[in-house]
Image 1 (cartoon, rainbow, N blue to C red):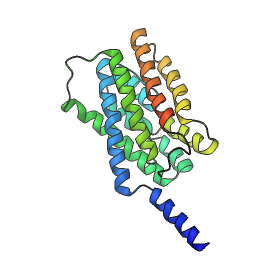
Image 2 (cartoon, one colour):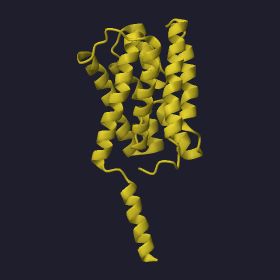
Image 3 (tube, rainbow, N blue to C red):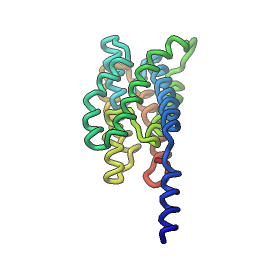
Image 4 (cartoon, rainbow, N blue to C red):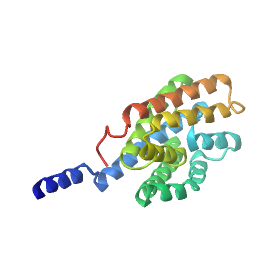
Length: 210
């Protein structure tokens, strides 16, 4: 009996991510998300969650996206700490800081001679979706609505991807006064693409890493 318990404990330990794996995943995931942000910014696209609010503020005021995104997320850290714990909150703070920094860095290394609106929406949505899945699977998020949807999935079994999709579509629709209907349509396409990736690849019980 003791031997079985010991094997179970070892198996659980083997499933847990190492610290260096968490760091690599957070860096890679935030690089993907920030590259999508860079593409969206170039063509004037929007997205949902706190990133969508940061885009709206960026377009209306001209303030750098990275600065606005980092600032908007500050109030959500308290909720993350109370509901998800210190480890999750620390990783989320790190991820938000990386996206903010990378989004300021990309323009110094990447330039676009041509960037189609709908192509950017789909490719950027895929990059965001993959980046979010990497962060979620390593116990992190990008703050804001992501914290709420992850909490609801863990506590009540609600699908984080579907919840996020609904919130994202509402936020994008509220931005109609800022963008043209064509840009709005492309933005919704990007939000749906990103959240389909999350819904298909991040289900409770399907992935065993911690």
